[in-house]
Image (tube, rainbow, N blue to C red):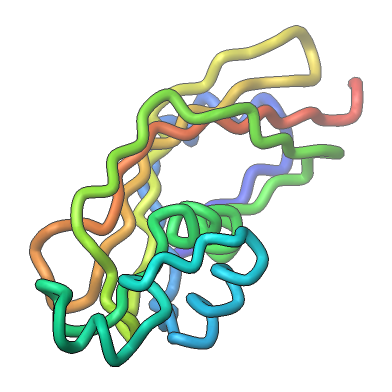
Length: 154
């Protein structure tokens, strides 16, 4: 389901809406690339042989920040706005609840929990976020995410 907001005045009616992204795989290639970009080469993420032998997960796992970094793409699959700009304002709470084994599929579940207007053309959207891991009962992460949307002035 896609939630589409064309005007700032439509945001209040969207409060409480729940949307969900498509499933996406977190491949070892993605994990390795993320490790290279961030410099975080901890063995539990990139050393398949050692992870198989020593990790309690028996495989490598995705970086929590990699999973977090996918939120924008996941939300973009299920929420659109005609705003002139959309700015990542911040996160009030993030918890990495469960590891994401390499090759797992995840999807984002987003609930628009709050809309706080900032004048005539801007608003802060507060999203309750849960990233689900296919086939498991615990989410990969939960977060409260604030996005500022700025519409063209009326």
